[in-house]
Image (cartoon, rainbow, N blue to C red; front, top):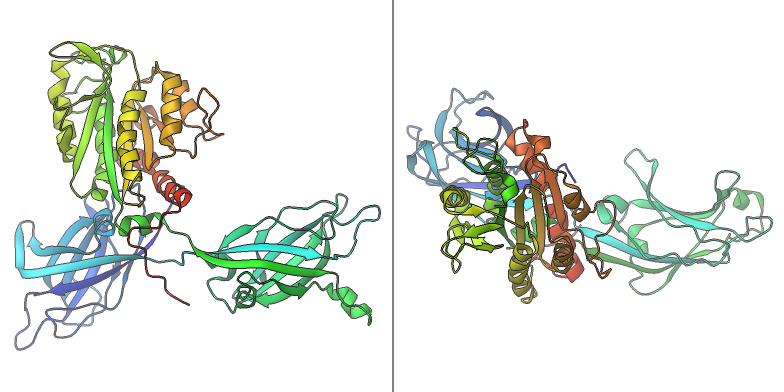
Length: 533
């Protein structure tokens, strides 16, 4: 799912702008820029100019591609436009803000004070931005059968399958759905299927669609049995009432006067349902809770030794810290209180020097929360000299710890909290069977697990837990309800920019969050208003 999650439309308004014009009010315009690296900014879009207004509400929406797994730094800059030139260097600057797209989409309304430069407010000026996803979230669900189809095969009956086409703007037919084949049957009933409304008919209920039934022939290409054309509106009239269409073979109809049809296609049910997206849930009030688990087992090596994975280099970093920063910098925008629980496992901890598999990095078990990502980093640096790296490497206690919070949240029956657990490890896992069971249990809860493997170890066990090729099962054979584990070896990203790691690590999360709430049948806490066509 790398790639754009969706496109977002930003609405912008300002209040109490500075007045730069003599004898009249300013004529403001807002420009949207995105950081493209090395402190450089590129313009994405701009609003219209509004004449004589200190409190403009811009009509033109600013459009931006949204990626959950990236920190997208944006700059909104407001100018007083006094001429016709596109270049803004000759216009008065009325103030601007810098923020991330994540901050905007996770706030229902995002208001900031405009600044002329860092720390210097532009009078009493403020800017308010709200986001809306651009899309039609509806999905068409269809149940279709046919009766008395023409027999196409010499020895047996036909083997029919169904195809739906929409007419594109050029007037040609574009395939949108192909069903399974039903063998040897002239009265087939295909299984229920769904197609996004956008794909099905471009969201236009009056756009022509063509439905075709063909017979699969092993020796030649498929033979058309018959077809009909209609519009989506006619199909969706059914509700639960069956609507019938004659299945017509064009050539037979022309040749034979007595030709009636080649069977009947029956639309048993055609329903529109709303499919919610990741942004629907986030904008609808879903908070993402981020927890970190750090591997302090002996196989990491003595933190004082430069070849240890926990050794902090002279410039203040190591692979553990880079992983915390990379993932945390993205996720923190989606958590309002910015308090993140952080734990260690596999070390002997003072004062008893017992091995612990879920100790708070701040040594405060009743309040393991760190303030922001910087708080996790500070707690990690402080605890390193105070513990003894030991073993074994047990993942299940920390997975079960987060799962208890997720289970408590799930009891509310609303899409209000989702949990992400980041485990950073050098890879030698001891309690594989218990971890498998913990993941299978967690797959029924609102949580995702990200494992970043540091160092040069063999990560076969981690790859086993991240089953892209099949379903993870517990020791007793119970399958995971959904795929919630993403494993990434740090060494593949050692020389890449930090944002590449966060991109790969977090790319699956939107899909995992939506799959959980869809499975539960929970809409967003505040569902989006459906725009009718």
